[in-house]
Amino acid sequence: MDESLPFDRLPRVELRAISKHFGRGEARVDALVDIKLTVRAGEVVGLRGPSGCGKSTLLNVIGCVTEPSSGWMQLDGEPVYDGRFLRSDLRRLRLTKIGFIFQTHNLLPFLTATENIAEAMELAGIRRHEARERAEALLDYFDMRQMRAYPSELSGGMAQRVAIARAIANSPHIILADEPTAPLDSVRAGAVMDLLTRIAADQHAAVLVVTHDESIFHRFDRLIGMRDGRIEGEQVPAHPALAP
Amino acid sequence: MNLALRDVRRNKLRFALTALGVGMLLGVVIAMTGIYEGALADALALPRALRADLWVVQQRTFGPFAEPSRIPRDTRELIRRMPGVAAAGAVTFQTVQTRVGPKPVRLFLEGYEVGRLGGPANIIAGHGLTESHYQIVVDTSSGLHLGENVPLGPYHDPYTVVGLTRGMVSSGGDPMAWVNLLDAQALQFAVPPALERREQASGRSPPTTTDINAVLVRLSPGASVKAVAADIARWKHLSAVPEAEEESYLTLFVIQKMQQQLGMFMGVLVAVSAVIITLIIYTLTMDKLRSIATLKFIGAPDRVIIAMIVQQALALGLSGFGVGLVLIEQVKGYFPRRVQIETRDLLIILAIVTVVCLAGSMLGVRAAVKVNAAEALASG
Image (cartoon, rainbow over all chains, first blue to last red):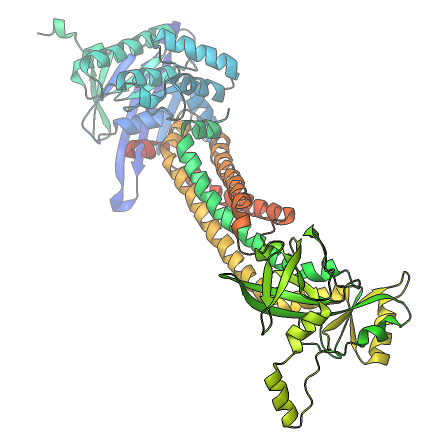
């Protein structure tokens, strides 16, 4: 890690020449080709592109869920997939350094809102009582009052807020969100983006968001385009009010 | 509270219904073992209640339960006078079918000499025989009551119920009954007068009505069962079967086929139950695949996921076992034959259920560990 950089500019995600293919021979599909990407602390980066261009695969590779076929990756200053990494190391990284937010909330249906968040903390080794208190504090931070409600009893927006709270429960430095605003209306989508921006700023986290939602493009610090498994380019989106 | 219990807590009704289904299945398994044990207990109830050291029967036969045995009545006197014999009692056995009011009644009737070996044990109401004729002691499983008249024999002589026993049935499941030896001999061997006249006219002697089926022997303290049995066989030309051997004849010859039948059926039932429980556990795990994928995504170690599946499988199996046991305990009294639930059998079934649940959950665990979290969530 480059210690000379200010804390809020540290690279949280660094990818060099990352490629991922599925299948062999004629059935081979190149999902990611020679990806080079850096996301720094405090940055909220959007990832867009047509369906099947590799956005979710890229998120899964960064999230240590899918192993790349080749390339080099460093998360929060720690090299990953360098041959010395075990499956349990990847699990530890997912638990402590990465927070996932999905298109659907994917909360555990048999746990209450508080328990869903506390479970992530307990898995990281935090005692149950403390985890419960911290989970309630997090829900309070998100203005959530239905702490004992089950996911099926929450609205889509509320469930997504609980999912975001779970994603940041262990104060991860990397937050990966796969179309988190897709099922929400524009008001709730804006609220979710507000939350992600606030988390990026408060926790110095790198936030990478896959999205098709043009209404939130202006909320990103950078917007990266993808096509056919490659990064096509990036732009700094202008606020709609400033658009020509 | 761990994840498995939280899942149960959230889905109480589904879990309860599944446990009820598994419980009914295991209840049938428990009932079958109970019927198996009950058949054995029924078969051995009479010889054990009579508490004889030796059963003296016709030469080269295996005793009154395994095959016919017919010996003269004075055999009891001969045996009683032998060294080492403390008491002896002559008995006959026969199955009778009659009707008490509109109700058909089938009894396994024992004739015995009042005051000698062979009388009814476990009298729970009334008393033993006090008159020379026309009294009967019956088991409660016959449905008869004290004071009722039971018509027996070709002339439907009324026998009054003077005593009731409990838990005394034959190896075939018929309720036991006791009458005076003379009455029993008349019922078993007497022929109608017309038939007797015909026998006499054709030059044949009329059949004797004083034969007995066996003599029960109780030995003096210190007397050797083996030695007395050998003396009886050598000098009286009879077979003397020790009590333990008589019991083994019953289990070997009389109820063996039924036991084998029940055993085979039980084996099939256990196998079917195992397959069904395994499928239920596997299906329950597959229903949770999305939750399992989420747990993997957030970094849950495999042991947390495995524990959730295994604990839930065990919770289901053990709850089902409990439900099945309670169900059978409630309804076993309504079975036409004894259902005897033994702790040893319950422990075996519990062990089988545990193994089946563990094996069943292993299928689920395998699927859960192999599942690609990204694909599982994407496909949702």
